[in-house]
Image (cartoon, rainbow, N blue to C red):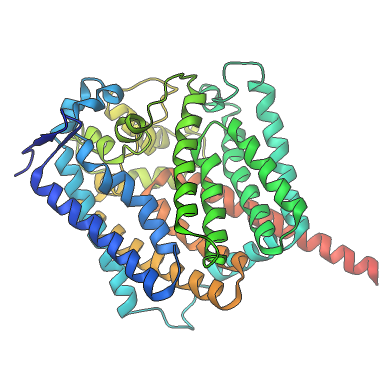
Length: 444
C-alpha cells in the first residue's frame, strides 16, 4: 500500500491511489463542514476555517496528488526521487495530526473551559493588545519604530541587487541580522494595528497609512511579512461586513493574495518567468508535505527529544555564543541533516507536524493536533462572540494572542517573533501609561 503509485495527465499528478481517496474524502469533509456552518450562522469565514484553510487545505490536502510528480524536479532536482519514497509516510503522519486537530475541536465542544477558568497572564496581554491598538499614540509609536527600522534596512539594500531580497543580504551578515529580524516581527504588527483601527473607526488618514505601509512591505523580502497582515485585515473586514461582501469578492481577494505571493517571490529572485499553476503546484510556495518527505529521507539519527524546542526557547542567545543552539536550532539542524551548508539557505518547511514528529514521534503529532484543535476552537468562539455581539474587531483580534502557544510547538523558530511581540507590547504599554500619567498630572 505504501509507495504504490498512479499517474494522470502525463505525470502532472502522481500519488498513492488509496491515500488519494482519503485525501478527497478529507477535502469534501472540510468544505462540507464550512458550508453547513455558513448556512447555519451566515458567517462566510470564521477564525477556525481561516486557520484550517490556510494551514491545511492548500499545503497538505489539495497539493498531495502533485507532491510526487516528476515536475517537482524544478524545485528539488534529482532529490524528488528520494523524497518520493517517503511522501506517503509524510502524508500519513500529517493526516494523523490533522485528524487529531478535528478530535481536539470535538473535545472543546464536549469540555469547554469554565467561564471563570482564565489564565491571568494571557488575559493581561490580551488587554494590553486591545488598549494599545485603541490608543492612537501607541499605534503611531509602533509605526514610527517600524519606519525607522525600515529606513535602517534600506541603507544596506538601496541601489543594490538586494532591494527586493534583503533577507539574503542579512542572512550573510550576522552582526546586523537581529535588527532585520526585529523589523520583520514589528512591521507586520504596525500594519495590523493601524489597519484594524482604520476598519473599526473608519478614519481616512489611518486607511491611507495602512495602504502606505503595505506598499512598503514589498521591500521587506519575505512573503509572510507582506501578505500575512493583508490576510488578517481582510479576515476581520469580511467578518465585520459579512452580509455586504459576496463570495466572488472573497474569492478574488484570495486569488490576489496567491498571485501577489508568487510575484513577490519573482521580485526577490529577479525571475522573469511566471507560470502560475507550475509555481503553485511544484514550486516552493506550498511545498510542506514534499519538504517533510525530503527531510524524512535523511532522518535516521533518532528523535530530537525536544532539543529543537529548547534551542528555540534560547533564541535570545546568539548562536555564536551557544554551541547548543548552533547544533539544535531547527533550521540549522534541517540544513545540516540534508547536507546543505549554504549560509544563505532559508531552510525547509516540514509542514505543521514535521518538527514535533522529529522530536517526539507520532505521540507528539497527536498531542499537537489535540492542543491545536482545542485552542483554535477556543479562539474561534471568542472571536465569533465578540464580533457578533459588539462588532469590536480590535478586542476580537486580541484573543488571537493565545495562538502563539500553538504556533511555537508547530515551529520552534517562531519563539523569536513571539519574544519580539511580547517585548514590543510591554514597551508600548509602559510608555503609553507613562504618557497618560504625565498628561493627567499636567491637566491637574
